[in-house]
Length: 242
Image (cartoon, rainbow, N blue to C red; front, side, top):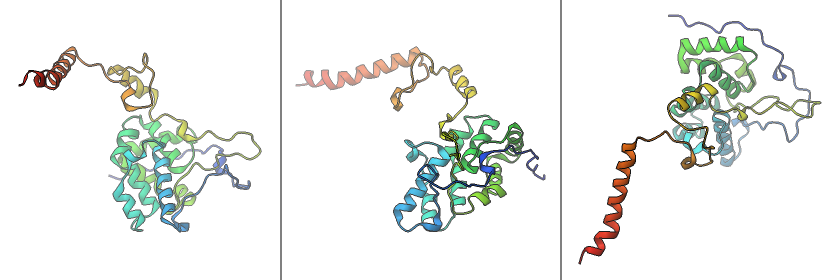
């Protein structure tokens, strides 16, 4: 069956569609490319920038690492484009980005992280959502990475980045895409329906502070018996034994 192509939509005027006339400064995005790497530390920075761009996380990047892909990139067996493809089709990206969002929001997140811009309008979101629904996650990612826009902006060797975030002659530019939550309100509502308490208890910074699903009374009784048995073996038995 022949795949459905991306439906036509009218791009609205965005900053990234206008040729840059400003002079770069410290606020300009840093471009990471394998064309100008001189030291191994620079490759480390490039790989870290790719993880940060795709997952929009800085504290838990080690959880998403794909060491085999990193090894291939370091030895020039794959390009940066293929490395990005590997990250966006990895199991962690599927579980932490794809599974947590509806198709429209997932399309928006991928366009932000892969093409380096926000969606033009809802017509574009619908067009790419059809590609996602008909060709699956891998086909959708391949379509984005093989698009003329991606190849012109980043090619095979440049890590995607948020293009033209700083607007000339304006005090403030566009918001960074990393401000967006990993999932939308609809997924949060599903978690609350499953019993996770995200209302009465504020969310902490560490995994043991995260809200957890309610536990049945039987589980509390079992845990208490196990704790009492362990305490008995540690404290009582050594005292009684001769």
